[in-house]
Image (spheres, rainbow, N blue to C red):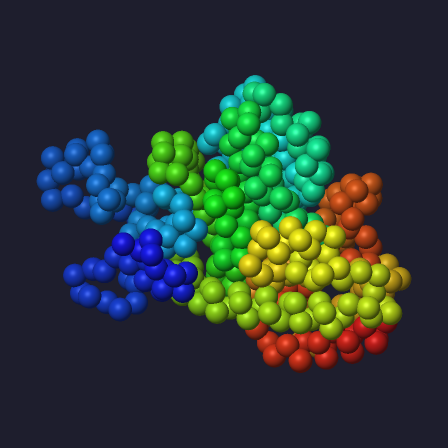
Length: 393
Ligand SMILES: *Cc1c(COP(=O)(O)O)cnc(C)c1O
């Protein structure tokens, strides 16, 4: 029914389950459990629960189900399973499909906690993980050998904003039968559709753009019904990564305005990147839809907008970067992204502090690099704030 709806309609109406009261706004089913009229009904439900039947909130809940169905309709996947955080989604997607002896190839440029799972945790359970420069297709070709079980990458690397060529990497992976798991946070569920480019499993931290207002943690894994129900659900329902029904409701409300917010934030991000490019205090301005981005053609082909995050490499390293951050009046120093409030981060001393200097250098994370998540403020106010802060260096 929802297949021919446009994104904005799906974001408001898909997945609605109205109770007998006919409520307009989705109900919050803040309940752990569900009662059965008879012992026979309980028995039958444990054998197989129907689409409108629930057992226990760790397995599923009507409010959580509404969120799952709405995001699956948007993404164009058959099914979805919501999780307590983005990391619960990444962890479950990988652990549910892998076993000792399997081989995984991953892009090296990863969100810190994703790197921890792939570099520290999976190898402890006998999974072999090889890291490649995700922008280098020849490196993927070489590493994705027959027998490789899964390929993992973030569609846009944080914070350098290098792109992975989703379609080409999926082709390389599928040649040897490997599943492709894409963390699509930086592209948002709107600007790149990995499923249309061949990806098998997509994960989001819903904490970012989907909430978009800094309130709750959440995550979601999307894929075929076969993968979600046969592989992922047994793992997640018994290991406890379930999303709270209250948080699911906040995220449902977030989805209703997702496109309006992301479109506005992406337009401002492009305007800010263009306004700052060429500033004498900066080495580089990185933004996928800026013509100077080294992968501009790929960014235009793969993404309908450049995203809501840009990064700036400030001359003078950490000292200059800190002076600029401390001089900002509107943009706040924090580490979330996709928020209505513009947020600036100094990755080398915060999100990527755990890496060695060599690792940071390899990923292009200089001491002068700052990441800017563009919010919903008036763009001229933001440009003014950023310029006066650069003056303060
Ligand atoms: C934030 C983030 C995560 C983790 O999400 P949480 O909701 O914080 O657990 C994973 N991947 C990427 C790319 C992220 O930005």
